[in-house]
Image (cartoon, rainbow, N blue to C red; front, side, top):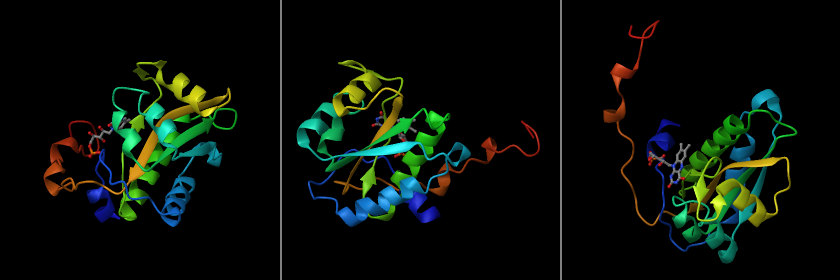
Length: 172
Ligand SMILES: Cc1cc2nc3c(=O)[nH]c(=O)nc-3n(C[C@H](O)[C@H](O)[C@H](O)COP(=O)(O)O)c2cc1C
């Protein structure tokens, strides 16, 4: 597990090579194996491959511009009538997606949508409208996925910082 965690980097450049459906399914399984508050499983997943829609998604915020180059984008949608921990449940699910993507030899990146602004105004309202997401649902983030166009250095033990660890009490 730590090997995959070390390898996980935010990948923002992708090959045009298609992502195999079997790999996508494994990633979606990982998403649905994520813990949720009260076990409610309130997420839904929109799989976007259409180039026009991906281009529109990449306009959601100034930090989403690369999304159009990913062969596939998973938009994590959250049913607030079922779950009450929108940010936590969505973010943990996103990390499962991210890690299984790495495990499948793919790259991904957490792209913030909730509480973000872009050229079309509020990013969440814009993406909801674009994808026909009904009222009562929210969107924390989207996860572009593809074969990495380049490798970034793995996380290394130099990032392990003893000074951030407190024994028994803060400062201890
Ligand atoms: C809550 C959250 C929001 C993020 N939003 C974006 C984003 O909108 N666009 C982006 O390119 N990266 C985004 N990232 C990725 C971070 O920039 C990235 O994780 C960080 O720079 C560390 O790099 P690494 O993931 O390669 O270790 C986000 C990450 C988190 C956890």
